[in-house]
Length: 600
Image (tube, rainbow, N blue to C red):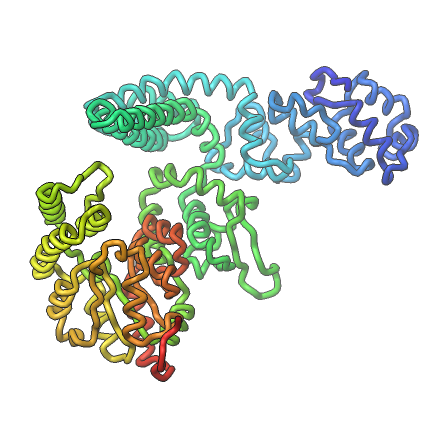
């Protein structure tokens, strides 16, 4: 292989041209004279290209590739591609600068500024993505080639010089106060990138908050490494502490390049809002119109084309639908935290929309499940009420004291919530020891439910359920007596005897996620498992329902809770009990007669 000198910046490979020519025409090959005739050159020129005497210009590269049926880059020496600038990539792709500006309908000045300086103005936020589409590469490829431009390399050096003292100052122990727009380093950074100082200050402040969060974890791990009771715990803490240190190094060293990339593609607030909404609803696979999204059509149309895909043809009279595509997803996942810092009003709107659809199940699907169900089971703590609330640490401490009195070991792996603690301790306790622990917890539960208030939407749901004929039960790891006492307080929303209670089993090994309690509830109520629904909010609820062969509908008020349930295999979840209330209200009674037996 003969690689030519930089010349016009094209890393042309004559040997690749020869191979493409001799393999053209479905392997029959093409003579140099024939290729020359087709591209308007002489045979001597073709042979000169192949022998590395000089490179063809971009137009000639495009013509050669077209006649040989290959991509222009297939005629380039890509072994040195990591050193190319954007201009090199463009020329190797067979394009002149005027070809790019004509295709993209941008001014030569705007394009030259991107190519030579790596900068795009706020009005040209879509330029880098458009150039990537024009050259048939990713925006990440564009960033990598621009980082080889001397002006960009110089700016990155300047950015590192300014960010180092800024981060060091604001991440110092005991430091208070946010990054300000009038700090000298911020002002100079704003000048480097041609952006407003408040914009730079918000982005750096976000990074400072992130680094300080990592530092807090480091400090906590340091305490464990110094004072843990076993060598294994100390070693594990030191290893995790080193991992956190590497995260800080990565965050600080990559920040200049991340700022560089972000400022080339920073979307205006309305465009970001539109793109982020499409990202939020992407799991539904729907083509959504601007009206359905509740945003202005101009905001969607201004989003860079590579980030979206559209349905419907102009002029057909049908509204155009939109979905986010891979490039848009990549942009959202890379920059969502920074957009949240820059556009707080949009952040609030997005969080509101996410909470509305967190784990959203289409109403028709929910309605069908409830229409077919004979029995509705509910978990208790976290769904109907918060049993312990602020008293939880006191209850846990009393259980620990009881365990010590019973000479049961309480190690660092013991859960801190009372029910989890009982489950954990019960595995190593005798029957008598477990009975004593259970008695202590049951007494605390009975006292706690006297003060516990029903959570939002609970009483409304029970009132609606009272008008239906579903069999109702609570399946829980809390003491049955405590649950019954709580339900009695809810009258007259629903008569307490309408709701059966299946409480904590005598054997701790049968507590959730074991399916025992939910399976027992379905069997006792004579309900086929396939027509039984468990409504809960924990991973243990989801796993118990799956093991019992019972449909599970999770209640997940946050994205984090919805993600945890999905990871546990729960595919149906809603944002609140109000969604279930709405469905139940439309169904006054199940349509099927009571079953005579239950599924195995």
